[in-house]
Image 1 (cartoon, chains in turn red, brown):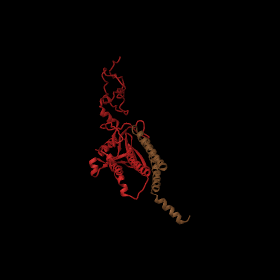
Image 2 (cartoon, each protein chain N blue to C red; image 1 turned 30 degrees about the vertical axis):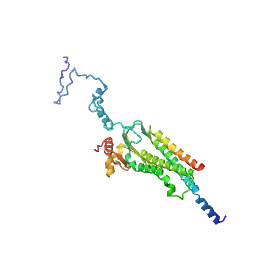
Image 3 (cartoon, each protein chain N blue to C red; image 1 turned 90 degrees about the horizontal axis):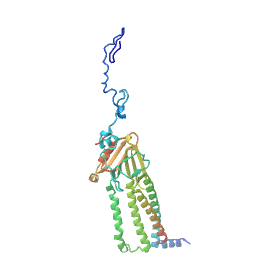
Image 4 (tube, chains in turn blue, orange; image 1 turned 135 degrees about the vertical axis):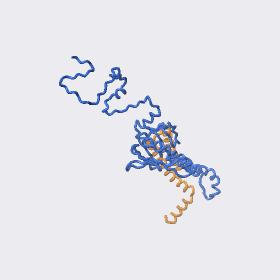
Length: 261
Length: 81
């Protein structure tokens, strides 16, 4: 007797199998074999024992959600970097040594510009002192007798030194910079012309970010000390007089996947 | 030359205010020129460390001009003043 397709045939002497969970019914002929349309769909048909990576349907997420998946916070906007910027997000036109090709600077930090006020005020005062005092110098110090060329040289040297004072202080502010990239934090400390200290740490090594803001001036101009604590014996990072510290620790916290605020 | 003549010469030199001022100015200018050169060198190094495309060339140029003016002033003081 020819068995029809789909029928069970029990031969003589064959034991009938004990009751067991019914095997899964095959899908209707209309759905089997399934129609595979793309490679993504093929991945979803892998056996359940195989570790399966859930494909992300990028076409179904919005742009902001996509940025969230890639790491950097989505709420940051590309900032315009000027020589006087003290806080800039996604700065354009700046690179640092040893920057990797796929490394992107997310945050640039310098001391708040208001911290330059003391030396700017000093320089201004020093600049306006000679024009007011030199005409009266012979009457104040009548015993000084210098040639006109020597006096001219002294004045020239005075203003050159004053320019050097301004240039040095601006350079110290300009190069004391902290960079937060999508891979690491780089901190450049410049204290004086002959001292510089460069340190960096990977984002994975960062354990905590905090800030402290104290004093009237810091509260008015909204800047403070941001402390980046790293794991183990690695040195901690301190962003001195960082503008908008709340925003800074939020960004760094999001980068290390530890929301702070 | 005895000690009296030596003291007399020193007093004569010191009493020339212009000479003393010029000497002090030259020494200070030499030190300042060295400082300007070191500053320029440091700025070149730091610009290589962190390079802002638009501003770094200007920064280097200003540092270089500053050092050149410092040396030029030293030469001016020595030769002219």
